[in-house]
Amino acid sequence: MLSAVTAIFALALGTLAAAIVATQIMNIAFTFSAGAAALALGLSMALVFIFGGVGTWAVLKAPAVPYLRSE
Image 1: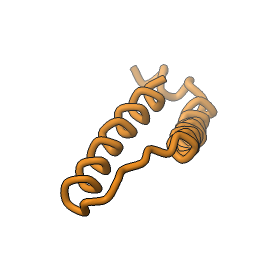
Image 2: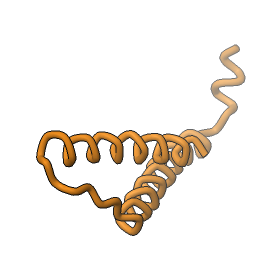
Image 3: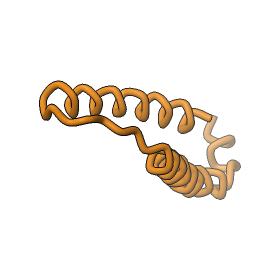
């Protein structure tokens, strides 16, 4: 859920920045591509899910007994 919120916020900010640069600095028309935006959102959320899952799996796979006995 956090990756989805972050990806949507980044998409909105990136789109705004690209529109400003394209229209104000480069003097060309700005066209939003929904397909490219959806692909970027999907890939970024998939990468966060994969790398987060790998990191979490390593922690969850470790036995808890040594940590509980040290308290």
